[in-house]
Structure formats: C-alpha cells, structure tokens
Length: 122
Image (cartoon, rainbow, N blue to C red; front, side, top):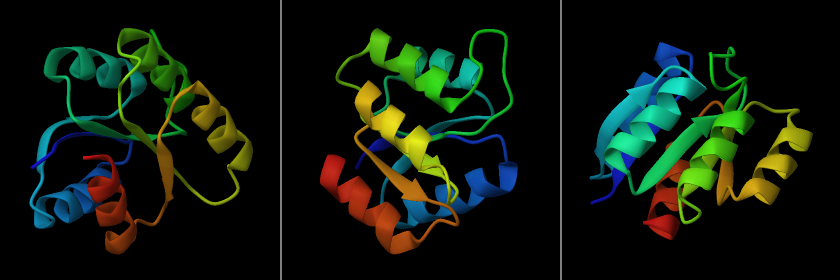
C-alpha cells in the first residue's frame, strides 16, 4: 500500500482522485490546495508518491505546480511526482518531466490510468 499526497486547488478534483486511490487499496495521507502546502506536507509526510496539479494559484513560496515540483525535487531528488494536467499543457508537462516528474495524467481522471501509474511507481 502506497502513501499518497494529492495536490490540486479544486476540492472536487482532490475528492475524485482520492476516491480512485483509496479504491485501489492505497492511502491518501494528505491533501494540499496549493504549492506552498504541497512542499510543507511533502517534507512532513515523505509520501511514496505525489499527484501534483500543474496549474494552481500562486502562494507565498510557489507560483504554480511546476514551482512546487522544483522545490520538492530539490528537497528529495528521489521523489515520485506525477503531474496532473488538463489538455493543452504540453509545454508544462515537458518542463515537469525535465525537472524530475515521473509521469503525468490528464484530467478528467480515468481510474485505469491512475491505477496504472500507482502500480508502476509504488
């Protein structure tokens, strides 16, 4: 069973993803609504995997999901971060993969794809 951190500014998206993850037998240990919370919760819990939204409102320390990814990867180069994006964000996805993200999933979330990513990286 993997420990998972979900990061998305939309509560509905966090709820949908949480349900898929828990139904697959994994544990959501924390949820964050912005990059600042994501970095702090990553440091606190050291989850097995992070699902991180790319587009989020800026915080005091991070301006978006890419910035949060950068900070998480500098904290832990072995972090397993999966980027979550809507269609049409290919440039952001490419940048995220260069920064160390392991993979990406497209919104709206498809349970099969989420479970595939979980089994591949956990």
